[in-house]
Length: 216
Image (cartoon, rainbow, N blue to C red):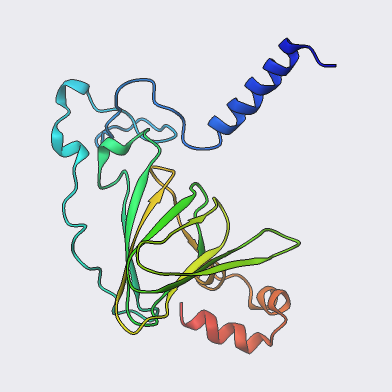
């Protein structure tokens, strides 16, 4: 039987691995982003605490509906460390997502964050896909007041299946969660991924790939 000290050590290692899976924990009350610093760090250099003010922790305008006049009929308004410098090192950000009727927040992933979405208005179909080789779609229809979690790094989507506009707010477990929209990454890279490669990967004719790439 393992000794209590060995079990305690294993528990400490597991706990540390969980802690360091997301943004590093802060070592002081705050580390407001200094936009004028040329120091390159994983995050941003700290502003002089004596110069910090309330506006460093403030943003106004999340009540304003995003412009959804685009091909997918949705708009994400991300509030991250670039808009609230005081989020630096705190490991959180948030977003407002507006949807037209049948508007889509297309399949995408956040490489650095888990997302918790709360539906405020409308009806959404949401889902995410598990990793290879299962690639299992986990999906649900949300109503007003419902909450859904999208695990870090997994491809997910939301679609408004109601007849009116929909509105959701998301919390993300990183000050800078990042976003990789699948279609943009695959068909809109700069320079283009070779059409031969994509045609073989998607098992379609090369002209189909060229046509899709032209849209991005």
